[in-house]
View 1 (tube, rainbow, N blue to C red):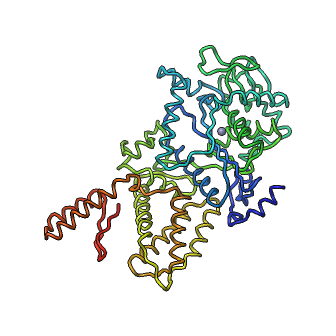
View 2 (spheres, protein in one colour):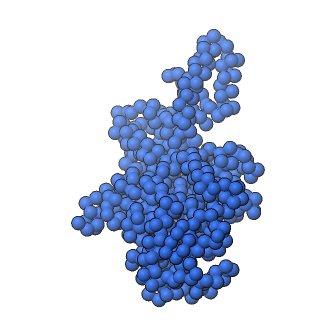
View 3 (cartoon, rainbow, N blue to C red):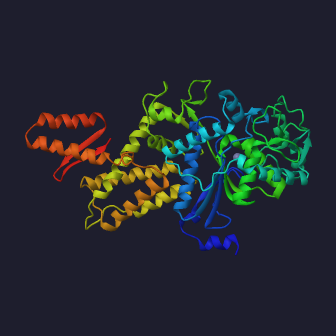
Length: 498
Ligand SMILES: [Zn+2]
């Protein structure tokens, strides 16, 4: 049965999902090849140093996409690779392998570097509540597949060998295909705008790129091949691994926007040259993170690591920001917009996050009325409309703030909600806050805290009972200082984290 027939059978509200495709530069209706299955490949990190904030933004964005597709019923196979070999310092096949260089500097095995930074990357992903992908393949684990792919491209006549290295022939490819299809540039344009860099004398054309690189004797990570001992070019691994796990054609290929001109352009060329087709229907790219209006970079002194952000341990940070406040901050911008980090913006987001989670915490205790003044169905529809419009998380969050205002009004007795609408509101908040946005209460992270808080509240009640108001005020003010608010009412005392 064809994909189109399956799509019609599998037709809840996601038929209205539109995704911006870098290839067509328009929003297109999302029609997976083989519903309810969706194949998604996202270029993962090169594990030679700590994950940086830009990485975090990219993987939070694709986590949102992964979560939403799953939420609306797709079975997503999400492949996100680890680059542990072949990524040179310069994107144009120049310089040393980033991992080998670090290994030499630190006098470690390259695989010790890989292990250290892969573990660190996973830690940060976990802190940010980013779900692990379905498969996380590594470049070094797929050298055989990469060599096979080079052989195929050679056999089709789109590559040539020079002294043990294999290069992709861009000009020959462009005679039949459109090399610059992804960023909408023609070859003449690209040729005039490409600088000639040193160390690439072996290449015939200046846009040609390496598929396989002959290893110098001192090179640490190298493998035997039909062309001698060497290592794969950086772009090759993603073509080889997406082919292997998602097939020659799959639905979504993603990554940071900086990958468009070289890495993804070359990936498409490799796939078209070897199997005759662009590997993905939708190419999805996340925009950059800037700091106070500037590109984040070590040389500008404005870069900081995720752990520095979470601990506040960097001079450009006014205070620590929790992983969930950080995630919320990033989701408050659309993934295709640039996002500027600043202390004020972070503090505003942090307050918003707490406001949302406070309302969320009140939901369980709300009481239904016989009459209803809170119609949840239109709100629910607007939440789906937001996400169906190219995963528009900032609009979704604005709708959830609207839901929070309703919750607070019901809690304060100013708005009536009946049982059916209350249940819909609970489902809505649970699904969108926890499942889709991937936010979680940071109090819940410590299971013992509620017990400790209940005990403190108990002590305060005792003090009040004994008319020891000095102690009861001291407890309330002390808790307030560390961010806990007590609320006294007829039913007793409740607490929440501000
Ligand atoms: Zn890639």
